[in-house]
Image (cartoon, rainbow, N blue to C red):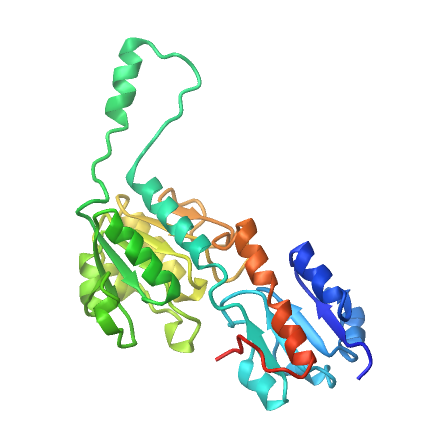
Amino acid sequence: MSVPLVLQTEDLSDHASAWLGSRCRLVRADPSNRPAFEHSLADAHGLVVRTYTRVDPALLAGAPNLRVVGRAGVGLDNIDVAACRGRGVEVVYTPDANGSAVTELVLAVILDAYRPRLFLDHAPTPARWSQIRKDLTAPRQLEGSTLGVLGLGKVGSRVARAGRALGMNVIYHDVREIPGPGHGVATPVSHDRLLAESDVLTVHVDGRSSNHGLIGAGELARLKHGVVLVNTSRGFVIDTPALARFLRDHPSASAVLDVHDPEPFDASYPLLGIPNAHLMPHIGAATARSHENMSWVVRDVWRVLSGLAPEFPAP
Protein backbone atom coordinates (compact mmCIF):
# COMPACT_ATOMS: atom_id res chain seq x y z
CA MET A 1 0.00 0.00 0.00
CA SER A 2 1.17 3.55 -0.72
CA VAL A 3 1.48 6.04 2.13
CA PRO A 4 -1.90 5.78 3.89
CA LEU A 5 -4.22 8.76 4.29
CA VAL A 6 -5.65 9.40 7.76
CA LEU A 7 -8.29 12.05 8.47
CA GLN A 8 -8.32 13.82 11.84
CA THR A 9 -11.70 15.45 12.54
CA GLU A 10 -11.17 16.88 16.05
CA ASP A 11 -8.32 18.16 18.21
CA LEU A 12 -5.44 15.93 19.24
CA SER A 13 -2.27 16.88 21.06
CA ASP A 14 0.42 18.35 18.85
CA HIS A 15 2.81 15.52 19.81
CA ALA A 16 0.39 12.78 18.85
CA SER A 17 -0.56 14.45 15.58
CA ALA A 18 3.08 14.96 14.68
CA TRP A 19 3.88 11.32 15.53
CA LEU A 20 1.16 9.98 13.27
CA GLY A 21 1.86 12.59 10.60
CA SER A 22 5.45 11.41 10.34
CA ARG A 23 4.23 7.93 9.40
CA CYS A 24 1.32 8.65 7.08
CA ARG A 25 -0.44 11.47 5.29
CA LEU A 26 -2.46 13.11 8.08
CA VAL A 27 -5.11 15.61 6.99
CA ARG A 28 -7.32 17.72 9.24
CA ALA A 29 -10.89 17.34 7.96
CA ASP A 30 -14.08 19.11 9.03
CA PRO A 31 -17.20 16.89 8.74
CA SER A 32 -19.43 19.98 8.68
CA ASN A 33 -17.89 20.91 5.32
CA ARG A 34 -19.60 18.00 3.61
CA PRO A 35 -18.26 18.24 0.03
CA ALA A 36 -14.61 18.55 1.07
CA PHE A 37 -14.96 15.95 3.83
CA GLU A 38 -16.66 13.40 1.60
CA HIS A 39 -14.03 13.93 -1.09
CA SER A 40 -11.21 13.18 1.39
CA LEU A 41 -13.12 10.36 3.07
CA ALA A 42 -13.37 8.46 -0.22
CA ASP A 43 -9.59 7.98 -0.20
CA ALA A 44 -9.01 7.67 3.56
CA HIS A 45 -7.50 4.55 5.13
CA GLY A 46 -7.85 5.80 8.70
CA LEU A 47 -10.10 8.16 10.67
CA VAL A 48 -9.34 9.69 14.07
CA VAL A 49 -12.28 11.26 15.96
CA ARG A 50 -13.22 12.37 19.43
CA THR A 51 -16.75 13.18 20.66
CA TYR A 52 -18.71 14.96 17.97
CA THR A 53 -17.96 13.02 14.78
CA ARG A 54 -20.53 10.29 14.17
CA VAL A 55 -19.23 7.17 12.49
CA ASP A 56 -22.34 5.42 11.21
CA PRO A 57 -23.37 3.41 8.13
CA ALA A 58 -23.90 6.59 6.12
CA LEU A 59 -20.32 7.73 6.74
CA LEU A 60 -18.93 4.27 6.13
CA ALA A 61 -20.72 4.04 2.78
CA GLY A 62 -18.55 6.91 1.58
CA ALA A 63 -15.30 5.38 2.86
CA PRO A 64 -14.53 2.32 0.70
CA ASN A 65 -10.83 2.27 1.65
CA LEU A 66 -11.26 2.77 5.40
CA ARG A 67 -9.42 0.25 7.56
CA VAL A 68 -9.46 1.77 11.06
CA VAL A 69 -11.35 4.29 13.17
CA GLY A 70 -9.58 5.66 16.23
CA ARG A 71 -11.71 7.19 19.00
CA ALA A 72 -9.58 9.49 21.16
CA GLY A 73 -11.55 8.85 24.32
CA VAL A 74 -13.37 6.30 26.42
CA GLY A 75 -17.00 6.12 25.26
CA LEU A 76 -17.94 4.73 21.86
CA ASP A 77 -21.45 6.20 21.71
CA ASN A 78 -20.70 8.12 18.51
CA ILE A 79 -19.31 5.08 16.69
CA ASP A 80 -21.37 2.22 15.31
CA VAL A 81 -18.84 -0.47 16.14
CA ALA A 82 -20.92 -3.29 14.64
CA ALA A 83 -21.32 -1.43 11.36
CA CYS A 84 -17.58 -0.78 11.25
CA ARG A 85 -16.69 -4.40 11.93
CA GLY A 86 -19.26 -5.51 9.37
CA ARG A 87 -17.29 -3.61 6.73
CA GLY A 88 -13.94 -4.90 7.97
CA VAL A 89 -13.05 -1.63 9.71
CA GLU A 90 -11.28 -1.97 13.07
CA VAL A 91 -12.25 0.40 15.90
CA VAL A 92 -9.69 1.36 18.54
CA TYR A 93 -9.98 3.64 21.57
CA THR A 94 -8.33 4.71 24.85
CA PRO A 95 -10.31 2.95 27.59
CA ASP A 96 -8.63 4.41 30.69
CA ALA A 97 -7.25 7.69 29.40
CA ASN A 98 -9.39 10.14 31.37
CA GLY A 99 -10.44 8.26 34.52
CA SER A 100 -8.37 10.38 36.88
CA ALA A 101 -9.50 13.64 35.29
CA VAL A 102 -13.20 12.80 35.55
CA THR A 103 -12.78 11.58 39.12
CA GLU A 104 -11.11 14.84 40.10
CA LEU A 105 -13.98 16.85 38.62
CA VAL A 106 -16.58 14.76 40.47
CA LEU A 107 -14.77 15.31 43.77
CA ALA A 108 -14.40 19.02 43.06
CA VAL A 109 -18.11 19.56 42.47
CA ILE A 110 -19.12 17.45 45.48
CA LEU A 111 -16.82 19.46 47.74
CA ASP A 112 -18.13 22.66 46.19
CA ALA A 113 -21.69 21.58 46.96
CA TYR A 114 -20.85 20.71 50.57
CA ARG A 115 -18.57 23.59 51.55
CA PRO A 116 -19.73 27.16 50.84
CA ARG A 117 -16.80 29.55 50.67
CA LEU A 118 -15.85 33.13 50.02
CA PHE A 119 -12.46 34.55 49.10
CA LEU A 120 -11.87 37.90 50.77
CA ASP A 121 -10.59 40.73 48.58
CA HIS A 122 -10.54 43.39 51.30
CA ALA A 123 -10.13 43.68 55.07
CA PRO A 124 -13.55 43.24 56.70
CA THR A 125 -14.59 44.90 59.93
CA PRO A 126 -14.54 42.63 63.00
CA ALA A 127 -18.34 42.44 62.90
CA ARG A 128 -18.35 41.55 59.21
CA TRP A 129 -15.62 38.94 59.83
CA SER A 130 -17.82 37.23 62.42
CA GLN A 131 -20.88 37.37 60.17
CA ILE A 132 -19.02 35.86 57.22
CA ARG A 133 -17.83 32.97 59.38
CA LYS A 134 -21.41 32.30 60.51
CA ASP A 135 -22.78 32.54 56.98
CA LEU A 136 -20.21 30.07 55.68
CA THR A 137 -20.82 27.39 58.30
CA ALA A 138 -21.55 24.26 56.28
CA PRO A 139 -24.68 22.39 57.39
CA ARG A 140 -23.06 19.03 56.60
CA GLN A 141 -19.74 17.40 55.78
CA LEU A 142 -18.65 14.51 53.65
CA GLU A 143 -17.59 12.29 56.54
CA GLY A 144 -20.61 10.26 57.51
CA SER A 145 -22.61 11.17 54.42
CA THR A 146 -23.65 8.46 51.98
CA LEU A 147 -22.13 8.47 48.52
CA GLY A 148 -24.16 6.50 46.00
CA VAL A 149 -22.37 5.37 42.85
CA LEU A 150 -24.52 4.32 39.93
CA GLY A 151 -22.16 2.22 37.81
CA LEU A 152 -18.98 0.88 39.42
CA GLY A 153 -16.78 0.84 36.34
CA LYS A 154 -13.38 2.44 35.84
CA VAL A 155 -14.46 5.93 36.90
CA GLY A 156 -17.15 4.89 39.36
CA SER A 157 -14.73 2.68 41.29
CA ARG A 158 -12.20 5.53 41.50
CA VAL A 159 -14.85 7.88 42.84
CA ALA A 160 -15.92 5.21 45.34
CA ARG A 161 -12.36 4.83 46.63
CA ALA A 162 -12.00 8.60 46.98
CA GLY A 163 -15.28 8.87 48.84
CA ARG A 164 -14.30 6.11 51.22
CA ALA A 165 -10.96 7.82 51.87
CA LEU A 166 -12.90 10.94 52.89
CA GLY A 167 -14.94 8.97 55.42
CA MET A 168 -18.11 8.60 53.36
CA ASN A 169 -20.37 5.59 53.50
CA VAL A 170 -20.12 4.34 49.92
CA ILE A 171 -22.84 2.25 48.28
CA TYR A 172 -23.28 1.31 44.64
CA HIS A 173 -25.54 -0.33 42.12
CA ASP A 174 -24.38 -1.90 38.89
CA VAL A 175 -26.03 -4.19 36.36
CA ARG A 176 -22.92 -6.36 36.46
CA GLU A 177 -21.85 -8.63 39.27
CA ILE A 178 -18.82 -6.92 40.84
CA PRO A 179 -16.41 -9.28 42.64
CA GLY A 180 -15.16 -8.24 46.00
CA PRO A 181 -17.91 -7.04 46.68
CA GLY A 182 -17.30 -3.68 45.03
CA HIS A 183 -13.55 -4.32 45.02
CA GLY A 184 -13.73 -3.78 48.79
CA VAL A 185 -14.56 -0.06 48.54
CA ALA A 186 -18.35 0.00 48.32
CA THR A 187 -21.41 -1.96 49.40
CA PRO A 188 -23.73 -3.30 46.69
CA VAL A 189 -27.39 -2.31 47.08
CA SER A 190 -30.54 -2.43 44.99
CA HIS A 191 -31.32 0.37 42.57
CA ASP A 192 -34.18 1.58 44.79
CA ARG A 193 -32.03 1.58 47.91
CA LEU A 194 -29.29 3.49 46.13
CA LEU A 195 -31.77 6.21 45.19
CA ALA A 196 -33.34 6.38 48.67
CA GLU A 197 -30.15 6.44 50.75
CA SER A 198 -27.71 8.57 48.74
CA ASP A 199 -26.85 12.03 50.04
CA VAL A 200 -24.71 12.35 46.93
CA LEU A 201 -25.61 10.33 43.84
CA THR A 202 -22.98 10.23 41.11
CA VAL A 203 -23.75 8.60 37.75
CA HIS A 204 -21.14 6.57 35.85
CA VAL A 205 -22.97 4.37 33.35
CA ASP A 206 -22.14 3.48 29.76
CA GLY A 207 -23.90 4.31 26.52
CA ARG A 208 -26.04 1.19 26.09
CA SER A 209 -29.56 1.89 24.88
CA SER A 210 -31.14 0.63 28.11
CA ASN A 211 -29.54 3.55 29.95
CA HIS A 212 -31.57 6.14 28.03
CA GLY A 213 -33.87 7.82 30.56
CA LEU A 214 -32.47 5.68 33.36
CA ILE A 215 -33.26 8.43 35.86
CA GLY A 216 -36.77 9.71 35.20
CA ALA A 217 -39.57 11.19 37.27
CA GLY A 218 -40.12 7.98 39.22
CA GLU A 219 -36.46 7.64 40.17
CA LEU A 220 -36.15 11.32 41.06
CA ALA A 221 -39.15 11.01 43.38
CA ARG A 222 -37.24 8.43 45.44
CA LEU A 223 -34.25 10.73 46.04
CA LYS A 224 -33.66 12.64 49.26
CA HIS A 225 -34.97 16.19 49.12
CA GLY A 226 -31.46 17.58 49.67
CA VAL A 227 -29.59 15.22 47.36
CA VAL A 228 -26.60 16.30 45.31
CA LEU A 229 -26.94 14.64 41.89
CA VAL A 230 -23.82 14.54 39.72
CA ASN A 231 -23.76 13.29 36.14
CA THR A 232 -20.50 13.02 34.20
CA SER A 233 -21.50 9.99 32.11
CA ARG A 234 -24.07 10.62 29.36
CA GLY A 235 -26.65 13.35 29.03
CA PHE A 236 -29.41 11.01 27.90
CA VAL A 237 -29.27 9.07 31.17
CA ILE A 238 -31.42 11.69 32.94
CA ASP A 239 -34.89 12.85 31.88
CA THR A 240 -34.08 16.55 31.71
CA PRO A 241 -37.63 17.98 31.96
CA ALA A 242 -38.32 15.69 34.92
CA LEU A 243 -35.11 16.85 36.60
CA ALA A 244 -36.10 20.48 36.05
CA ARG A 245 -39.41 19.85 37.83
CA PHE A 246 -37.68 18.00 40.68
CA LEU A 247 -35.20 20.82 41.25
CA ARG A 248 -37.91 23.49 41.27
CA ASP A 249 -39.92 21.46 43.78
CA HIS A 250 -36.87 20.71 45.98
CA PRO A 251 -34.74 23.85 46.30
CA SER A 252 -32.45 22.15 48.85
CA ALA A 253 -31.41 19.61 46.21
CA SER A 254 -28.84 20.37 43.53
CA ALA A 255 -27.75 18.84 40.25
CA VAL A 256 -24.31 19.23 38.72
CA LEU A 257 -24.28 18.10 35.10
CA ASP A 258 -21.24 17.93 32.85
CA VAL A 259 -23.03 16.07 30.06
CA HIS A 260 -26.22 17.01 28.24
CA ASP A 261 -28.58 15.87 25.53
CA PRO A 262 -28.06 17.47 23.09
CA GLU A 263 -24.61 19.05 23.14
CA PRO A 264 -24.30 21.92 22.87
CA PHE A 265 -27.76 22.76 24.22
CA ASP A 266 -29.71 25.81 23.11
CA ALA A 267 -31.91 28.39 24.84
CA SER A 268 -34.76 25.87 25.12
CA TYR A 269 -32.80 23.60 27.47
CA PRO A 270 -35.14 22.92 30.43
CA LEU A 271 -32.47 23.36 33.11
CA LEU A 272 -31.44 26.87 32.14
CA GLY A 273 -32.36 29.48 34.73
CA ILE A 274 -32.88 27.00 37.58
CA PRO A 275 -30.62 28.17 40.43
CA ASN A 276 -29.90 24.70 41.82
CA ALA A 277 -28.99 23.28 38.39
CA HIS A 278 -25.28 23.74 37.72
CA LEU A 279 -24.32 23.14 34.09
CA MET A 280 -20.81 22.54 32.77
CA PRO A 281 -19.71 22.28 29.11
CA HIS A 282 -18.52 18.64 29.10
CA ILE A 283 -15.14 19.25 30.72
CA GLY A 284 -14.72 16.02 32.70
CA ALA A 285 -11.71 14.99 30.63
CA ALA A 286 -10.44 18.54 30.16
CA THR A 287 -6.95 18.30 31.56
CA ALA A 288 -3.79 18.54 29.50
CA ARG A 289 -2.67 15.10 30.65
CA SER A 290 -6.01 13.48 29.85
CA HIS A 291 -6.07 15.04 26.38
CA GLU A 292 -2.55 13.77 25.79
CA ASN A 293 -3.50 10.27 26.94
CA MET A 294 -6.53 10.15 24.65
CA SER A 295 -4.61 11.54 21.70
CA TRP A 296 -2.26 8.56 21.69
CA VAL A 297 -4.99 6.43 20.17
CA VAL A 298 -2.89 7.21 17.09
CA ARG A 299 -0.52 4.41 18.12
CA ASP A 300 -3.24 1.81 17.63
CA VAL A 301 -4.39 3.49 14.43
CA TRP A 302 -0.89 3.06 13.05
CA ARG A 303 -0.65 -0.53 14.31
CA VAL A 304 -3.75 -1.47 12.34
CA LEU A 305 -2.52 0.33 9.23
CA SER A 306 0.77 -1.55 9.60
CA GLY A 307 -1.01 -4.90 9.68
CA LEU A 308 -0.61 -5.47 13.43
CA ALA A 309 -3.24 -6.26 16.05
CA PRO A 310 -4.29 -3.20 18.08
CA GLU A 311 -3.59 -2.98 21.78
CA PHE A 312 -6.99 -1.50 22.62
CA PRO A 313 -9.70 -2.69 20.19
CA ALA A 314 -13.26 -1.67 20.93
CA PRO A 315 -15.20 -4.36 22.80
